[in-house]
Image (cartoon, rainbow, N blue to C red; front, side, top):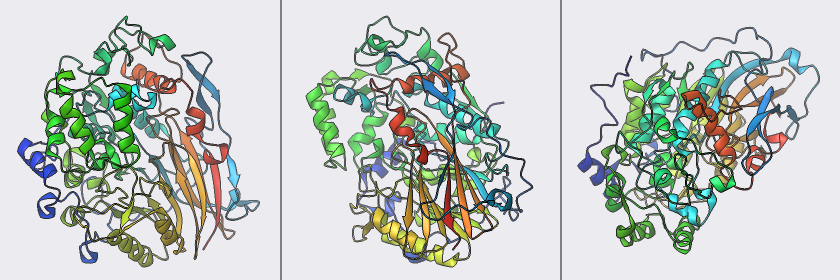
Length: 587
């Protein structure tokens, strides 16, 4: 059965003039909405009740049922994908990662497994980076300067994400306690290029339905992978490109298969969404407001090749935070008109504003099992905010933050209004455990450029947010992404202690997500169990299998070979950052 769209609220219906006018008018805050931040009186409510799939308030979360027993099937405790030898490394299965008990903040006491009760169990997905790989505004040509600028598996992000949803749905219980899983929450960069196409694909992957991961010409792929340019993997061609020289296969029919319809079952659990810089800004780093870039995104020209020196210069303008509004990129594109290739224009590739981001989540077409809005509410829409609270368990509250900086650049910060809202929310729930979610980590919140819509508001960095969280005894964890690497850090605050849990992405190998269980050990301590999971796709690939599942397996293997020097070990982190038990005092 085909997916039914909402008639009354089609958040992804793109009107060209509306979008271009909005993206060009960043200084007119009333007409924009995407860069607005609330005053104290405009902030979203400190507690937003969960909703059932019907839209009515959900009943109180019941006490956890008797545990089934530790359940490790399908997790990295049981096995992990591991690359073999050679310049092109085929994947196989290896022994799983053992669990590490960390007592940095409190000593683990014996007998706790027999006493503990579960407070909440949930799944974190982060940095899915669903990519419209044919989008004209992509920066593939930076590959001339650095191989990390382009991924040979970018056309398969939808298939990979659906396979991850299948894995989550297959989990019968939480891995350590055997308790039921309460929900799933993403921690940003769900899309890659702030494009309406990608937002539709993400919401459909999560809520269920059919997706055709293609834009432009519905019949043909129009991107760098059939360009004949030696810089990129040309899967359908006999061209001896740089990747085939390293052992990448020739796969006839690969691009046609990558563009075929994909079916997602949607999550079987309630799910919530957190915004990341790639969800908030074109290319994840340019502030909205340039009408030329907005026009280029939906237009019929695409730059696919650039000299190494020029690629390096423009790439550095981003990494060194010298081009927050995309001026350098705009000038480059204007100077390269004759070098561009023709592609099919597509209005669906237009950038979306934060208001449209919230509207899309509220669209009933993407409700899935709920809750309606997936955390976002009409209050967020009215106030122009993208932060909220939600109930996670009988005595646990989740707090989803917006750490993107609307002024531009990929690193983040938080405005004073949101910081005050967070402080007030934690005070109002001082007898409830709080798990905080954001896209950026404490170390990557280093960009305090003013919000163009609120130039007089101060922006606060990661150290200031860390200090605020540490001043509240009820904060137990801060869960985030952005760095594409597993990293777990203890924090000792002025009033309490908490763990910062950063999880690797699902676009870079080893392509992971994380199950997190918060338990009361009944001995004056709490434990947070973290268990990494992979997608449901098999570790071994078959180059003749271009089915949806076969492509999901290939997505993982290609990601393991995206760089000439393996990067999986660094991104998977040390054993203490993977499958863990994190102990802290019960405040």
